[in-house]
Image (cartoon, rainbow, N blue to C red; front, side, top):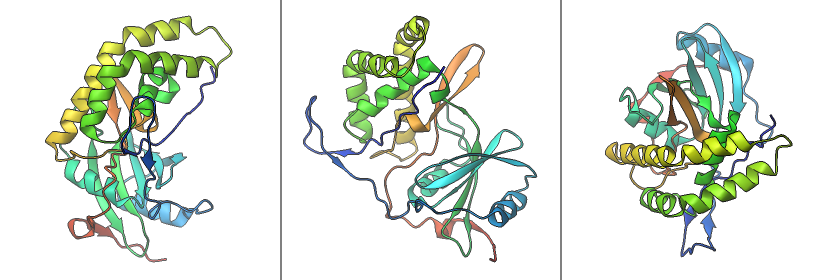
Length: 251
């Protein structure tokens, strides 16, 4: 089944209403250039230094590139200092709905940081989870408190809007997919609320870059547990470098 891998960054809101929102663009200071490539030599060096032998390319985002390695882990190379700072803070804390982080380092002589985290299945691979998590993209704010309030208040409206958007992009019968999404609505809202609480407990309590593109899941005893990965809080004021071990890469 073809599913549109829709991704729209949720940006900081200003003076919004239910029908009208305005946004501030995310910082592009740390974004990868459109034609920027990471050399095989650099990737091989980092993977080896982190203790892994094999890797598989997963994808490239605006700030970094991810690779799946053995032990069901992901190594991400990123320029995003906000995500790096949060990975340091969350490392080895093992929350329910935030990805588990294990290792964070600065790659010397480059602009990259390496982050080791668990691998989770992206929700965009499953229609019902796509419909549910796509609701996050309609919330007109990246403020944690406003996300929680808007999601709970508007979930029915967001869900129907997401179903319509999904339906326009597939050409097969999706009645069962839609039914499954509606049946999981309350669980979805509860899990997102728990996720937001976990972020606040870990001192990530202002803005977050939460959208369908960084939501995954783990299946445990027939229960779908949603997991937030690539945790960026849009805070670029802290330099994480003093807190990190370095990977001494020489070009």
